[in-house]
Length: 146
Image 1 (cartoon, helix red, strand yellow):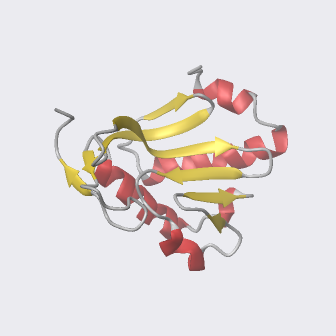
Image 2 (image 1 turned 135 degrees about the vertical axis):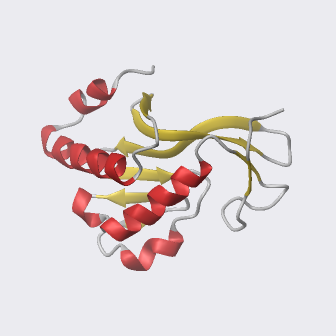
Image 3 (image 1 turned 180 degrees about the vertical axis):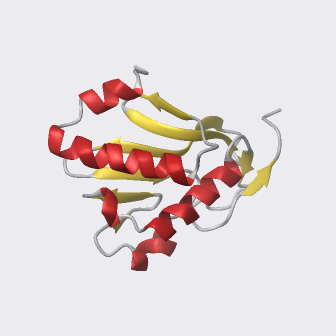
């Protein structure tokens, strides 16, 4: 199920939709070069390819935003978000996600840093060379799998 951006907004409860739309707008303003798309109820921004030492590989969004029943979840592809935890007083950080109640819970300077990272990996191949993807920075390569 791919759907459209309008489908994602239409299936989001009214109170949460306003926050989702505001956060979507803020992300698109902070990272205008990232293509805004959807996949399975996710709002996606940019794409990157990844390859693990095991040979597993694939493609995913550089950033993705998902309305959940109790929050909006911003996934930061290939990046641990703990580095921003102390700057997110109302947000809760997971390994690679930030859970927000309101768009204003994500300070503009943090959003810009996240958007800059996403822009850096957009269209790139990330290769962890056997490192832990949550602890060690991936090697970013130009070009695609091959």
